[in-house]
Image 1 (cartoon, rainbow, N blue to C red):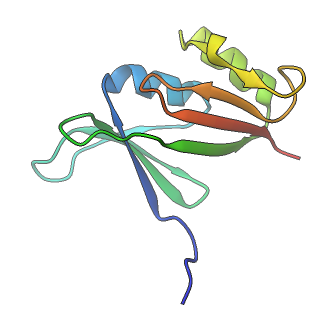
Image 2 (image 1 turned 180 degrees about the horizontal axis):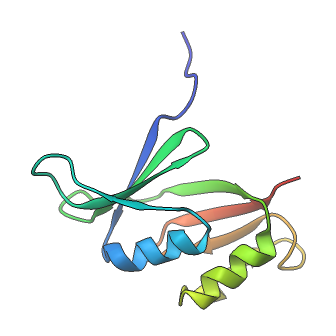
Length: 117
């Protein structure tokens, strides 16, 4: 038996709306959700994996690094800047338009962005 795929990833966010804007700047289409009387949160499908943004509560997420393949890296970085994200936290090998690029989300999670080949 082996792992076939990642089903979902939950990120706990100190400021849910700020994080929503950041991830929408990456090109994700987040939808508001609430399961029963649970916390209001945002969710989207990323290549068959569900990404959910939840309020921080008492269970912080720490040490997470998420890798995403994007179709237009330069455009994603431009969109992040336009949404007010701090893209000054970009670390790259080579120029900004090359891969990989790491940005830091509003809660300190490292997001590695790679240009689709």
